[in-house]
Image (cartoon, rainbow, N blue to C red; front, side, top):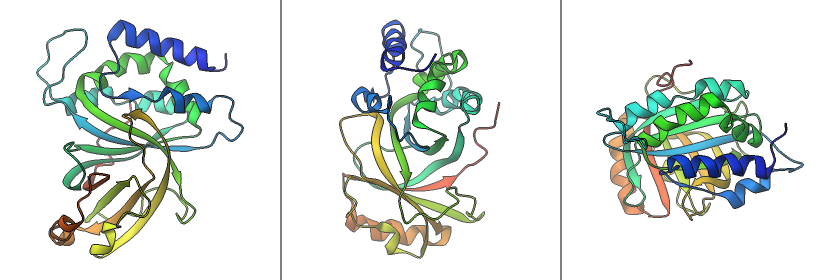
Length: 249
C-alpha cells in the first residue's frame, strides 16, 4: 500500500505516544507532509548532526552503562537503509568545532536515499522500528536536514576522493552569504549542498552545507583564523572521516 500522509503520521503518533519518542528532536511534520504526492520527488542526501548522551538512556527503563555513541552503533540502520535502496555515504567524528552555539556536535553523517519517500518507507519497517530504540537512547539531540547537490557540485556526488591524510571541514550555514571558512587555509571543495528543509531538529532553518577537504597540517591554523569568524548561525566543524564506523549488517 503506498504511503499517505495519514499512513505515515498515524504510526509516528502511535510510536511517540507509546514510547515517548522522539526525545532527540522535533519532527517537522509540516515540511515532510509536502513530500506526499509531490511530482518532483528526487534523491536526497540526509545530513545528520549528532550530539550523544554521555550514557545511553533507554525509554523503557532498562539499565544501561554504555555510552550514547555505543548505543548509536547498535542502532546502525544499514539493513533498513539497504531495504529501500538507500545507504550511508559519510560518517565522521568531530575533532574541532569552530563555530556555532552551545551544542557541541559529536558526529556528522550523510545518508543517501533514492527518493525522499524512501526515508518514510524505511521508518515503517519492523527492523527499523526495533533498532530505533537504540538511537533514541543514545542521541541527546540531532538535526536531520534534507539536502541536494547545488548546481556547482560536480558528479559523482560522493566523498571517495578523500585521501588518507585528509580531514574535512563541514559548514552548515543559515545564510548562504556567510563567510566561507574554507578560504582561510588551503582546501579542496568536495561539494556544496542546498538544504531543502529540516526533517528533525528545532525551529531553525538552514540554507546550505559545505564540504571541503583540508590537510591535517593546516588544522591549527584554521582553528586560530576561524576564531574571528565565530557565528551562532553557522555550525563549522573539522571532522575525521570514518567510512567503516557503521559496518553493513
